[in-house]
Amino acid sequence: MNKLLLTLILILSVIICSSLITDTTPEDSWLRPTIEFPKDNPLTDASINLGDALFSETLLSRDSTLSCHSCHMTGAAFADHLPLGEGIRGRHVTRNTPTIFNMAFHPYFMIDGKFKTLEEQVLGPINEHKEFDMNPEMVIERLKSLTLYNRLSIEAYGEELSIEVVQKSIANFERILISDNSRFDQFKRGEIELTEHEMNGWKLFKTPELNCIKCHSGYNFTNYAFENNGLFEIYQDSGRALITNQPEDLAKFKVPTLRNIVLTYPYMHNGSFSSLELVIDHYASGGKKHRSQSNFIKGFEISKNEQSALIAFLETLTEERLLSQD
Image (tube, rainbow, N blue to C red):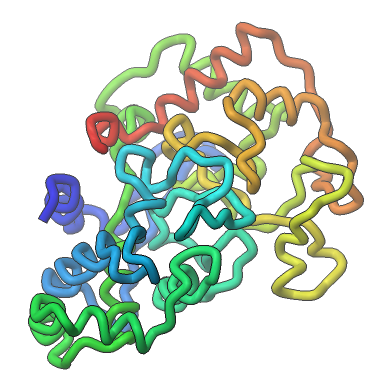
């Protein structure tokens, strides 16, 4: 079991119980959600051990070169640093790889909301031609050639390895990937003070002019809504509309978390912005006025010093323990 996993398991007893991050203003108080495990997939050490092993198992991909961990790297806050995700044999997917920290708190998964549960999502990259390009039957045939996985499956679920066990164990492993100890978290708990520059950035984040907090709100710095942020006049990716077939959902994507944002570059659904400065410049410009563009994106004026302060605040959302990881 790796060092980070041990740390995550040690803090689970704290995380699973809801706790209020105190603050004096209503818009600035967040309840840390409870991690809810499905009734048919309860939290156990054995399920986490199996899920951890499978998360790094390259046999899940057709040419045995990629695992989940290949694209969700620890030091990148379980994202990667590619504009677009990359599958086997250099095949590029159409979207940037998101962080999977705090996925336990999401109401749906993928940036178009395709999957309703983490268990369902596990099959996504396995089946996808541009990612692992595998089928469930072949996955189980390969994994059963190693006695380790059948033994861990029996320990975790009382049955031989199956694709359902693979889904459940990886989903449970992902549920305990929690980011809750950034400098900002420590500040909110009254353990440290932020610098004046960082505090100025936090105040800017909440101003009516910038209004970042309208979408990036709550404990996970996202309202999980589907929005169009005016990145293009014409989109190649239809976003949420691919799932709903509704014209009003054209080019709308789930609002991403800002936790560990410094570590999850490049930004936007297609990885088109390499820096936070470029992201801020985009929102300051007011977007490209796509017909689905959110009414919240209106543009604003911001000085270089204010931009620096805003980024300094965003840097406080970094989970410091990740900086020494792979």
